[in-house]
Image (cartoon, rainbow, N blue to C red; front, side):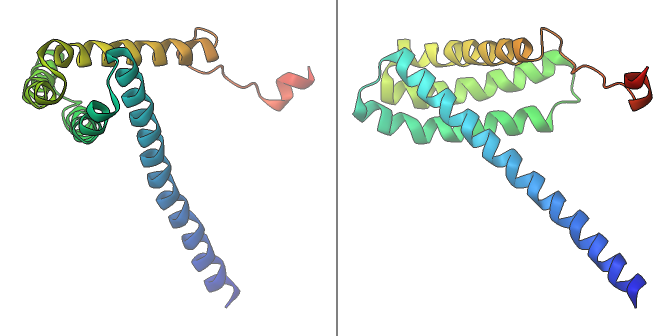
Length: 143
């Protein structure tokens, strides 16, 4: 009986951690999306009316952009870039209806700037090392 209880509790604990990871990824993605949306709106100097119309389109674009990256991560780099370019061309027309042609072209440049800034901040946090430092064994710390 104790063995059965132990096995069931072990399965429950491990499965609950798997579900928790999925929600954390989505929340992190939403935070990044919202920050990126805010950053782009500030750079484009959007009015409140423009921002209200721009936000739902940008959210759809961001979701499709991330989905395209995830689904095509195994493709050669040029093929991935082509898929992203096709996505951007489709959404540029939707952005153009809301914020005009010049600013709709700038959306993607500001997106790239935001991504580069985030990557730089992460590297600085890790000490300019893309990988976190290895931890030493307890024995090595004692010596």
